[in-house]
Image 1 (cartoon, rainbow, N blue to C red):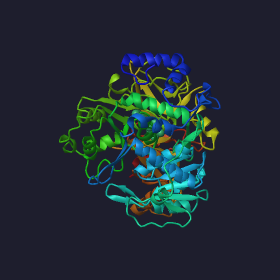
Image 2 (image 1 turned 45 degrees about the horizontal axis):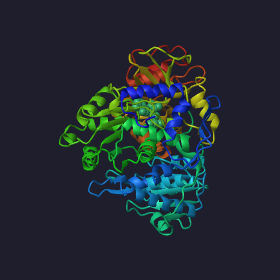
Image 3 (image 1 turned 90 degrees about the vertical axis):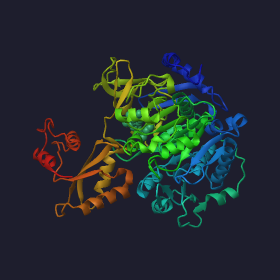
Image 4 (image 1 turned 90 degrees about the horizontal axis):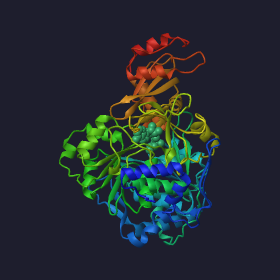
Length: 631
Ligand code: WTA
């Protein structure tokens, strides 16, 4: 049984095997990892409750598989390379030996602060090596990490800390982002006014910012590291013990904590990395995501390290100091596999050819895309200008909840088609459903993307609220995991993912619930009611369009707009800033009080010619007003 597939024919036969007998298939794959106790049973599942368990009774530690296992052959090979925000700063790296030492030391620091198996540790940090090291240190001792993207506001951070009752927070003085410095520790101090569960805060200075250190609570990481040794045996974890929580937005309510477990997540993160990127010994791999998102978890840290790869951690942004930065880094480190998001591709495409024309880029073998649909123009630019027609372009569709890549080409072994993610990975039984939940058998049809059989890294629960996991993913269609995406298959069965079919906006590859943005808008004193929809945006994929009713005593003005935006920044963070705000006097509501978003979406798209049936609205005249309104 090959762990890494090496032709399309082999993919087809592996796929067949994986569906004919999934247990036997995953049994064989899982044997490629190191377990301290083998599992007794491969799979138990039902999608009603839901309850899914993989490799039952097995014991393992993912860091032994990510690090210790490679020490014999690859101890001196680079595991992580760090590339600074500042192009003039030397890049640094850690070999597998060094990473082992650093992770063990950091794990001992966590222990010395009372962190034990099962405790939750929150992260609010830039992309520096200490982030990778400390996340792995949690896994080493069985603490559950919850990384919060450091672009979220202190309020959003506090919500996430409280939801998981985190005991420790790991942060930095600030964050270097292009020419700016973001005062991370100050934001943390604000958040912690309201988070009694946090007992200690570990801080790494990387920005030279003045910060307050609260005696007895805040500790400097280098000082703490001086006090410990580098000996830390890995905690044997049950296959189904939680490994991490990662918050993500849905169509209703507050963001939810997606829970992944040790065994299944490990098996799938490693397997999918090896196959999609076709990593070969000594290659240098670079994923530009942030570890605050699932892509960073699975394909900067865990997936690459499980395969003994060399993975780059990049602190900066694509356009600093100029729009050639990505390509400079590719040439500097001779990157072989490069993985980024369509929003970055489109932004760089718009900056002009001069930024890549003088770059070499010949080291590239596989270029990947993730996070949102890649439109044909961006696909061709990426393939022709960056891949120079010589690379495999893998469009990878997956989600925080799936833990790993579900639909994608496998390096150069799969057919490529613009804007098509392609075929499911072995073990992934995707289907398209019609409105009534019936499987669409024929190709060239559109439907709701769902999965009918569990794979090892499927979401296990939403932290502290299993009912929510059931309602969001398993109740729409009996017996299926529902993705929230719409998709189409072409005549050969290749999938093209079209986008969300629920009230989730994908803005620059960031997932935001319309309800979440509306709740934040409603926090503004003068906002009476609001409705938020997504609309096509040339760079961001989708932009955020807010229809807002303000207090009748107030005059609509640029000032109010600005203060509304400030409210969003403080409630969620700059990633949720509306691109357009339109003041309206009413919203199109049905008699039952539901906002007819379909109409608002059409107006936001600028397509007002056919708004469909508006007769069920309480007051159809509001539609005319909104149509004629200004942004
Ligand atoms: C969207 C990111 C089209 C999709 C890994 C999904 C995509 C959501 C693709 C998950 C793709 C991700 N083509 N759409 N290749 N990749 N999406 O949880 O709508 O941040 O449901 O995970 O992004 O976003 P999340």
